[in-house]
Length: 590
Image (cartoon, rainbow, N blue to C red; front, top):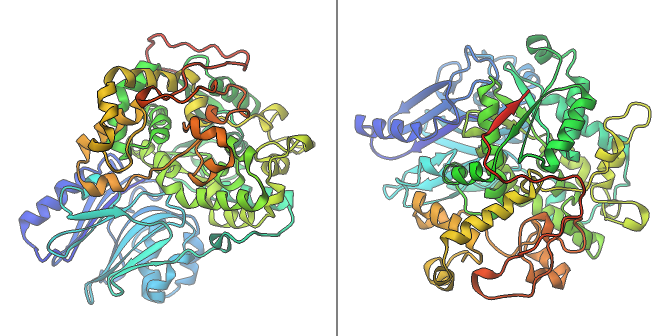
């Protein structure tokens, strides 16, 4: 992932302002350590920090049309860029970058070209003919983007909060699937898929159609000119990504450049569920497997860096981001610049354990729609920023536009969890890849129970975080939490601890408003908490809060006051999980 920063219409074209833009752009250098660029036209500035994945030699940004009257700064990957180039036969391209098509598409189609892009992207385009500009963000919000406004009437756009929070009077998350037009003076939604209305679909389940759609989503993401690998937790989603990648890698340009043997990466506490399962899948697929270990103390020591980079105080996001942040640093040290990951499947297929309690197919489907629409605030934010902190790009095939259309058109009755019929969570996905002749995965992996990433790296990780927070947040602090943090008031010591750190880095009101809130159990939306009355006394984003569902669920505790309202006892029924919490150096095994 790259880092972009744009300052538009600031009524200041001085050298001092240029220096300030450069200074702010350097705050994003971790996202793009390969090159920096800045284009200035009057009082408009487009800055770029590049992570070179496609055409590393000549694809530096900002990018331009033939006569340099259109300038673009882009963070993203356009997977259909070769097809789009064939439509633009009257245009001459300056580079081989996949993002080079954007300026030329604007020349041909005006502001109505964004839906033609198949990929992940955030960009700002400046038309110097009239100093108008547009900015856009990809359909689901895989890439991060923020917009702000200065007192001088200027518009700021940045890949991360830290690029604009000190210079804007107000700023907010740039909504995914939207375009901002200076001519219109506001946003309009360019992404309008059938599922967005939340109407209940009725397409019969076709396992082969679903399989082919996902295989195509993975294959198109093998477009790379640099070394890459897959993140492999050993769960269903990452294992399918790894299996398809390993199956189709041979014969691709990436294989010719970097070899046909796939590299896989996993992180966890010693003896964690993910490490064991990932090793088994890696052996089955024949990948070059890299296993990273961290301790609870390693993670705790990284928390402040994690919050600075991911720019949230959401509890479950921080829990899951920390192992991913540590793993990304190790992956980058091996010379890898891109990884393919499994985010998005649980939202599309109702894979979180709380979906066991969905009362009917209508509620089930509407909850999946809500979850997809909120992904940019949670898993997309984690995957993007945890990896970008170290100049690593994460690609997520489950969030492919075409695949989402196929998966979300299925009659949700097929997605419902029906234990009496053998339909566990994500059964439609599991069944689609249950191939007896050419197995994608071992059966017990294909039908492994869902583990949230922050749980799968080792259950004692979350327990250790709670214990650490309890040592630093007093009862008196919790009693006054509503007065200190009236917006999204933290209800646990852990949440309070993260909030203190976040406010130190990002003290503006706009920053705290950019983070979502509300009741949640096992990553549910607030609406889904209503599905089970018992959940209201056990509000925790861990999958183990899905009482009566998870095999290692929390003991149900009677509600208590203040900070003590958290589970204190864990019942471990999963066998063979040896959790080690003693100090140990972060290590690598290849």
